[in-house]
Image 1 (cartoon, rainbow, N blue to C red):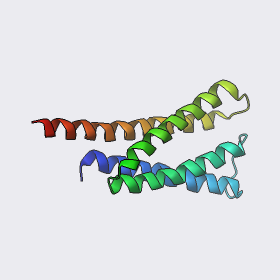
Image 2 (image 1 turned 180 degrees about the vertical axis):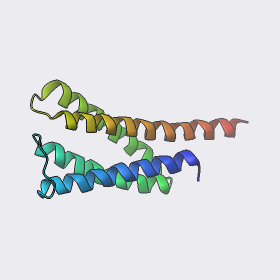
Image 3 (image 1 turned 30 degrees about the horizontal axis):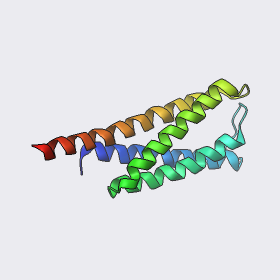
Length: 126
C-alpha cells in the first residue's frame, strides 16, 4: 500500500472518529461547551464523521467509490464553512475553526489520492 494512501486513510479515519465521538458527547450533554451550539451543525458533523470512517475503509480497500466520497465530503465541508461564515451570525468561532480544519484535512486527503492517481497513470504510460 502506498504511503499517500495510508496517510489519507489514517486522516479520514481519525477525523471521522473525532467528529462522531465529540459530536455525540455534545449532543448527549456529556461535554459542556461555553459557546452557542448549533445542533444541526453537530448532527451534520456526526453524519459526515460516520461517512468519513466509511470512506477511510473504502480507501483501505482501494474502492473507486472512495474517490467520489472524498470529493463529496470536501465539497460539503467547504459549502458548510461558507454558509457558517457568511450567513450565520450566532456561530461560534470554534465552529468556524473546526470547519476550516476539516476542509484543510479533506483537501489534503483529496490531494494525496489524486497524486496517487497521477503517479499510477504516468507509470503506466512508460
